[in-house]
Image 1 (cartoon, rainbow, N blue to C red):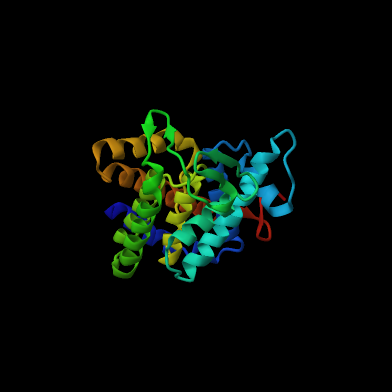
Image 2 (image 1 turned 90 degrees about the horizontal axis):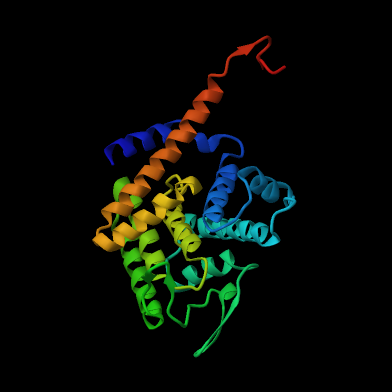
Length: 267
């Protein structure tokens, strides 16, 4: 963690957020990776063109473009609430999920009634993903309420950068492990993490799509070993990867060789 904090200080000293449109394209990147993890086939360029110019990529399922648009809108909503230092409650979590699934949600018929996943409604049946069963549906609401209460307490008490980052990572793990919804749990949990980072004015985390297998393995090992260290270590490594990438790209661009009247060599 010490090396991560040094890297974070270096990133902040460069004032990258002052670069024109930096935040906008950073949000595009977060949306691309988060939706790609969940099955979107849009490339990062296609994601940018869709969000920037409204260009739907040819030959790709419309549902994937809708997933990208929904995630981007949910991300902006989560960050707006985070920067406003809104309280975390079940209504906020459900609203984030509803926005994630606004145009791609489904209706699930259960013995207890119909659930429209595009409205942020909790699941009313038990779920299994792979060989893992998540908490029973009757525990979803109370566990989510308990999580929100604990997070609000921690938001008020946590003072160090290290503790704030770990809080965001832990919230991510806890919500996705409760698995309160039929769909969009991963995206919603990652957005809750970003909400907390925005709350504390920290750079936003990305779970890189190329590290999908390691991501799921970290979640599984954390549950099996009953130790948050596995997921924390994974997320710290992802955070370092993001910060290093942004710093290197900025320094490479700054140090590009110039000739002539200040124009780059491509002219």
